[in-house]
Amino acid sequence: MHKIANFIQIIKKIHLPAKYSDRLSAFVGEFLGNSGHFLVLKNLSDIAIYGWQDYLHDPTDYLLIVAMLIQTAYLSRRNAFPLFGNLIGVTLYTLVDLQVDGSEFFAEPSHLVFWAFSLTIAGLQFARYRWKNALERWIIPLESVVRMLMVLAFYLVVSSGENSRDWITREMLAQFTDRNTHVFLTSSLVLIGLLLGFQRLQIVVQQQELKKTSELLRNLAQWGMGTHVVETLVKNPQGLKFQRCDRSILFMDIRGFTTWCEQSPPDIVANILNNYYQHTELAAYLFLPLRVTFTADEVMAIYSTPEQAVSAAKAMQKAAKEALSSYQLGVGCAVHSGEVVEGLFGGEDVRTYTVIGDVVNTAKRLEGTTLAGEITVSDIVYQRLKQQIQVKDCRTHQLKGKNTEMKSWVLVE
Image (tube, rainbow, N blue to C red; front, side, top):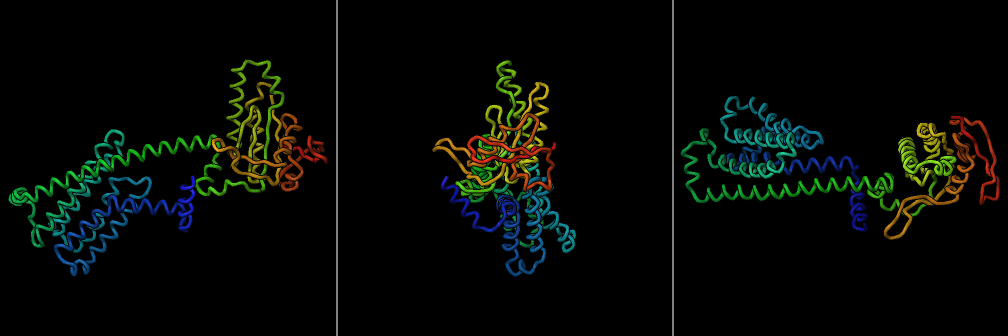
């Protein structure tokens, strides 16, 4: 946990919003892993053949850099289409350079290699995209081998020289394969491509497993701790230390539930209670609670503002009626606001996020005085929201554990 916290603190020092950081990471990953390969090999081959002077004074080479950056930007998007995306760079480069070279463009060996491998990589990535589950484990190593063969192809381009046009002939291939150094080079590139491909496949499989595991853990964490706690732990672990803050506490309870349970079969009780949970939880989460907990027939929800809590109470009361009215059951609901202490409470192995304080106890006591079908708010909540809510009754209570009477208000639904 300390290592995770330290890592998050380092990331926070980089003043870059998370969404931009993710985009930059995806852009760099795409350039280093795919689009940049074409750019580097094409430019190196041009430099080797024509020299630095011609390369630096050729505007089409700068165009190639822009074209491949555009391709990288597109392919780094989440829903990029690989068949189209991998042809962006070569297409843009061709459209402009055709205006300069005319029909001679396709007589240039490096251009043919550029197109051949762009089409090949585009086809392989499309096949992986289209038939991911069936072909991915075959395509990843094959794609790595193709990238290594691209190095060999540009080597042939450089070997053919500046003036060669008819560069791939049987005689040339025969001379190439007759030399032991070329056979060694070719076989080495293929084998290294396979090894790198299998390594990449292993990484992809591990990433997929980690993604599944992280999603499962995230779901489990949200079910047990709540979305607010999980997001706070990821973004700011220090935010879960004990701290005083203003919160609005909502309690809701089924009236007469214990008596009803004594007269009903356990399986019916379990089904009704679960249906009640599902209805009220959906209503509660419409207003972004920090935490929702269920204890028997009681629901406790923690909200940042009284506006959220009162709106949630109305929605939850309506949802509870839909779930319980056919069984002649109803709920009482109460909202109270004030300063609490919140954080992670518990021991070393079992901890949970909650809030404690007099505000919580008062909200629970107030809910106990509320009749079925009613929503009660404390006078503190009423004073904050009296321009936004309608009330039909004002009551005073001598709540258990309180030295003074407390005023509450019953909302008009």
